[in-house]
Image 1 (cartoon, helix red, strand yellow):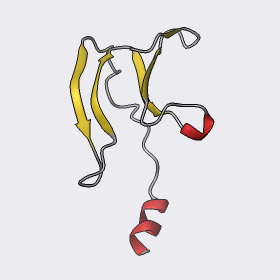
Image 2: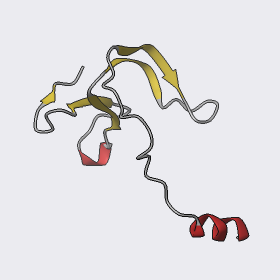
Image 3: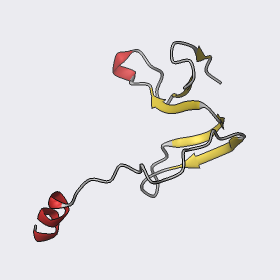
Length: 90
């Protein structure tokens, strides 16, 4: 609790003294990824997708109770430079 109080009393930093961020380029590719938080429980099974510079990507599990298919994970992307345009799912 003392540490939390000390942190709350510190002046916030803005990063104004840091150089500006540069736009990134390139892609990160995930091929046939299988993942789980606990042994024996698979969250992702054989998922493949690319993360591209300038896009926000989210993995969303479809809820069966809301009409999604069981264990169906969708990948959605949105370009950060044009928030109103989205690309199709892979």
